[in-house]
Image 1 (cartoon, rainbow, N blue to C red):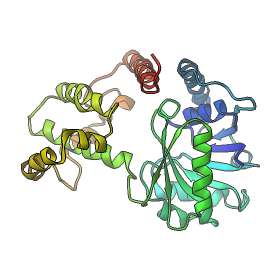
Image 2 (image 1 turned 90 degrees about the horizontal axis):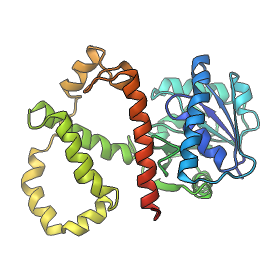
Image 3 (image 1 turned 45 degrees about the horizontal axis):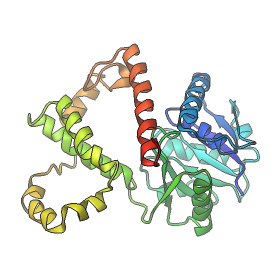
Length: 307
């Protein structure tokens, strides 16, 4: 039974994950190598708690979050360690090597990687049968779906334990049956991003209009009807007919589009740098974050059958 959870890495996802686990009655200890990240995490945790209150997620007794600057402290007595460091195999491997002698053979190690195959990560830990992918979707305290991915050496019992934990929290585990790069959510997302970037580069549409098209077109529908169900609704005959001419014209490039590489070279990384496709002030960033949370909460309540 999982009762104590260690979170390693307090970037974008860590505080939200911590808040949601604690809301479910788990004891959470969270760590980051950067003191500034730990300091920032306190405010992020408080913001996540406010959103969970808005969602009506009841508090289960016993749940709590504390922060530490000690790696040995964070994993001490942990039943589950969630690794949440940047998407770099060597950086993740360094974490696994550091905690290997600090955790017991029964401790489950879950990676929140967005798409690095779990099998490749298992090579860096002593008990690969206890390693599993547990990919939360951002923002993790609002989005209830979590991908569960087994590597080649993951024990079935490890997968079952994580799926049971997710269900016990009132969340939605999705089993990814093959350990493919990007898993499922990000493969679908990046296929969409590749196409919209290509359309903008080709001058087919402006960024603002493609955002409106996706959000109020397919995005609006997909929130209610999943893509496979949508395929049934449209009809296999319609899909077959359109695919015969459309598939040959869809973007299929294997490199990264110049629109993205040029923006990177210019230091225009998006919200984190104040400019990307769009420009952002600090006030606008805060406003966007509040607006996103409010709208996601409202949509989730409706999808769950509320008003």
